[in-house]
Length: 145
View (cartoon, rainbow, N blue to C red):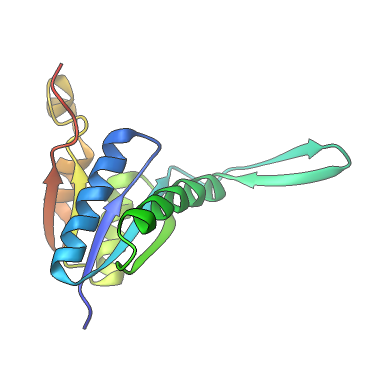
């Protein structure tokens, strides 16, 4: 069975840095990388653009975020097998659920919100580590201020 590394992304540089670290790990392991972007709940909005009406959903927006990170990773790691997708739910739950469904070997998350008061209030990294069915790698992506 092929090895799989999973990482979660949003529109932030720390998430992109974690995704690059995940790509490095996947390449080193000879694994496939799956990039996932979570969205809170499904929402849809109709927008009129000229004579056309567009339907934009939260799922499409998350898929777009994952696609953008995917494209960057493909440029930097052209030999790496990379897939991407979007999942409903909070980021930690979405990552754990995807890890279970895909039989993931490692989840890579950034250390955004692990320092300071947020450490007490909760963080994605802590929640993933507490519930993941696999190893969790917390990439150093956030500099202390």
